[in-house]
Length: 359
Image (cartoon, rainbow, N blue to C red; front, side, top):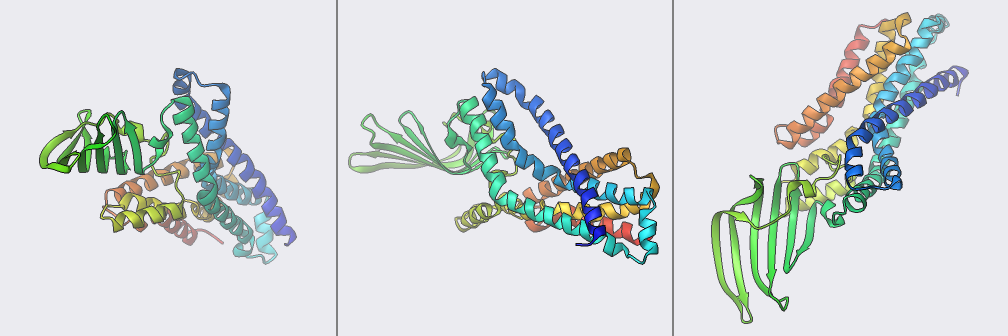
């Protein structure tokens, strides 16, 4: 590694570390004020606060790492420009590619680390944080935080749910098994699809079967019925887990493949599956985007401008990403395009800025 590369990486690392810590701190502060009422309402102990928010740090770091990369590149190159070091390097025959290569390689390294964390670390931490919030703080059954193949017991009734779409207020493959006082099967209701409307689960049709000691005695098909089921979509919804944040790429791929094979629509899981690859690579995209911005601003690239620009670009990125994912969930865009749309758009924007920048 050359002296110039070490100098650039030292400057980038200092800004990146400070920015990452600051963004994580702000995110935690906002999340704390959103959650604190719930913790107080359920009488949570201090260690519940500490463990819950500590476990949220990997997920938060994954979200704000692109902003930290953008600010690190912008401030590093901006500092070179303000001190005329960039001009001196050009005068010595050092190309822009040679100057920015260490920063782009570092952005790639951050993306790869984020990709590994998204697959192995973040799902574990999110699952544990959700377990603390749901089970230890709220006192809900830990089984509720699952999404598929859920088994519940309600008195003398056994309930099986094949798939939960909490955000869509929808259950698929609902089976209700009624037991008699001797815990023998007395009845069964099969509901292909139930939607939560007006505080009740409604279905287009259900099949009801009754049993006695000799076996099946009656089977009826009912249309436009309400399902006697006391749980609500909120009981299945994870805090902060609207995008299956507790599942990694491989888990999402297996779940999507199994659901499609069984005749269910796996589009939401396919969108999130592709997003597991696209989101970590945003750090590389933001590092690339920071270069033309720094070159355009030149000597005026101060700390305040860098922070403001990073926050604005980051907000714009997350808005575009959220809109694209929403279109993907609604099947208006193919899952892979919905997941990668924000990265592609901002990469093209960076290329356009490069074309207008002086090298």
